[in-house]
Amino acid sequence: MQRYLCTIATFCLLGAAVNASRSIPASTSFQSYRPIGDLRVWTFVAKDSTLGQLFSTVKKESEIDRTDGVEIEEILRLDYNKIGSERKLNVTSNHYVSNDGYYLGDEMEVTVNGQGEELQLKREDGQLKGYFTRAGNKNKSELNFSEKGFAADINFLDLYECFLAMKDIKVGDTIMDSVIVPQTMLVEKVEAIVEYYGLISLYNKVKDSAFVIRFTLPQVMIFYFTPDKRLVKADYLAQQMKAYLDVVRKVPVEALTRPALTFQKFITSMPLYGIYLMFGAVALLFFAGPEIQKKSLYVFVIAGGASFILAAFTQVPLQTYLAEKIYLPKVREGQSPYFWAVIPALPAGIMQELIKLAVLVIIKKFVKNTKQGFLFIGAAVGAGFGIIEASFISSQLPSISVWSINLLERGFLVLFQAASGVLLAAVLSTGEINRKILLLGAVILANSWIRYLPVFVQKNLVDASLLYILLPVVPIILTVYSVYIIRQNNLATHK
Image (cartoon, rainbow, N blue to C red; front, side):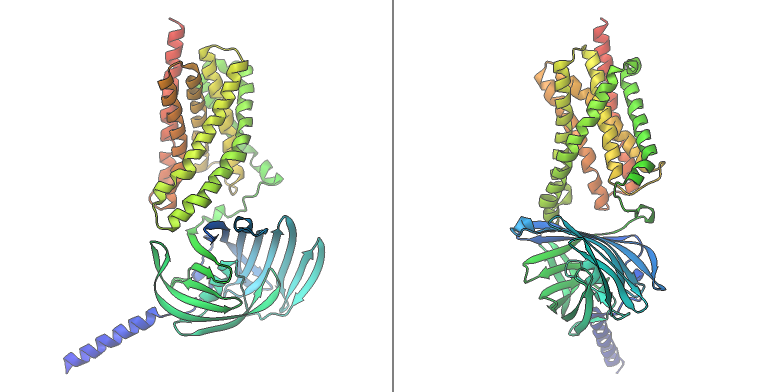
């Protein structure tokens, strides 16, 4: 009898476990599944082309209409020109939801094919009040929408993720609701059925356990939603478009300021730029010694800094393009990120070194100098290039304190560029073809290695703090060898 009771109990427990895997309860609060600092990135793909991405970051706690909630920064970039449709959509929004995930408002800027519009909508006294612009004209708006209603938009997957996270999900259930679409300020019906739960093939070799939820309204689409409240894939059947969740990461709260380069940020960043100048001066002093007193040397520092502008308009867009068109698609297919990360890293190293080399070729042609003096010029060009690159990188990132670990990283970047300038000058000074190829190849590979290293952090193979220890290794090796070349040349000159 006991044996039968044990068998029955075992089957009951198994049944309960299976049933549990087929259903998940609603989240208790928004921050229970997306805390402050949570970053999520979805990539949109159609016809084997990457159309763009949605970046969603939970920025901070907020209060609207006496309701506590959170502010979510959303950045959506979609370029339909890649698939033959003349439409380019850029949306930046500060989106507000209550602690229960209910809609509280938006501050939105929308640009379609270069035409910009604004939308401001906040809950106030039981209504949604604000304005939207059309052709530059401001139109006031008041909408009646339930205080316990959600926002959703087919391109803003973080909104649908919130919508699903705050509901009980069970295989076989039908979801019926109404949501507000912030962009259009219209209320739409939502109808969906939870079809299945199991191990799903998201793309090629990547799988995840997820609920398959088929929507019939507002359009036909299939969402793949995991038990830990991640919308990992969206299949837009009518549009023949898919979206994949690429990144889920915790961002330090202090790094959540918007990274736009404004006049105010430029002024507040002046101490950083001054420190980068100091790094450049120290690097130049290290290589050139007493020659640093020559005013003509600073003309070459300016020339090197100006040459980085060319890199900003060539190398940076090329890196972005290669990452979107080759690296990300290959990684989504389950292929090695460590292999494909070479694709955006290597061209970056090649382009930077060729730009500096071109500057030195021009200088060598028009400015007469000794071989030793030309090595000092190479250091000056490299230092100027590094100063502006460090400043450019800082302008693209959230505001940080002057004294931080990032400062050390930028300092070694300036040192690397100055050392590589010396080696490039040596390339042009030597007559041996094999030595030219060896030196140029070493400099390009070293530069590319610096661009490649972050992949280990992105894949959680190396901690970020360890990366800051690894980064100086290459600049130090190049610096030692550059000093060796300068001293060897100095000895040869005085024989």
